Amino acid sequence: MRTVRVDGLDLAYRRNGRGIPLLFLHDAFGDSRAWTEESERLADRADVVAWDAPGCGGSSDVPIGWTDEDWADAIAGFVDALGLDRPVICGLSLGSVLALLAVRDHPRLARGLILAGPFAGWAGSLPATEVERRIRDLEATVDVPAAEWAEEFLHSAFRADASPERLASARAALLEWRPQTTAAMLEALGRLDLRSSLPRIDVPTLVVHGGADRRRPFTAAIAIAQAIPHARLVELAGLGHDCCGEAEFIRAVERFLDGLGDEAAA
Image (cartoon, rainbow, N blue to C red):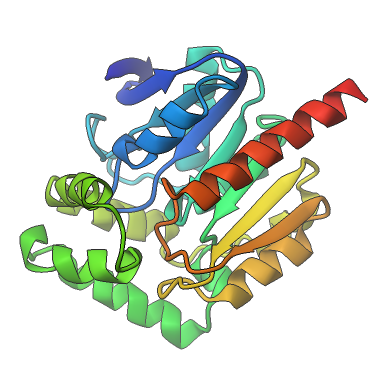
């Protein structure tokens, strides 16, 4: 694990491999350990970087009063601090929202996007009543130890035959989760609507939906893929919400990276 200083924050990250820069942004209740399999499998073709978002893993706490613009700037500052040349940015769930924020505010930051289990912000992908329900549910976890709700969350995110190693890694990250991070994310991102920014994205984009995802509606992925001009939608049958680390997902990432290489050579 390494750290880099970005605008007064110490941001932890893992880095492995050589090749096209590839930045992984994890889901809520997680950290960079979520991308262990990708880091190992893709090291022969990509400079793989997985960050711990502010307030997660080994990174500094989220500053008080942070806005969605601050989240976007943190990603851009992180990319600059590591000298990544227009990385492909891959985000899972909350990570996909952060990826969309980053290219909204910094349009030339990425050469491509991979959005897994994505939302255009809750308000951009869900009915208002569902947005408020989800906000209430998350607010209720702030004062409850993660150990009391961790297994229910993991059951909803992973498919039944997920590997024990992946479950153990996700459980460890979840049990280390900081309640103040939930509050900070809700304040800045809870009612975010990114739909108006999607048509302005002008880089190749892969939208991935797990066919057995119980936390994200397929309609959200469809709408995002239709709104982004150069997007392609892939549904991975049988995969749950936490599709990262699954062989089918990694193959989809490999094909996307290969396609970017073909475009550059053309």
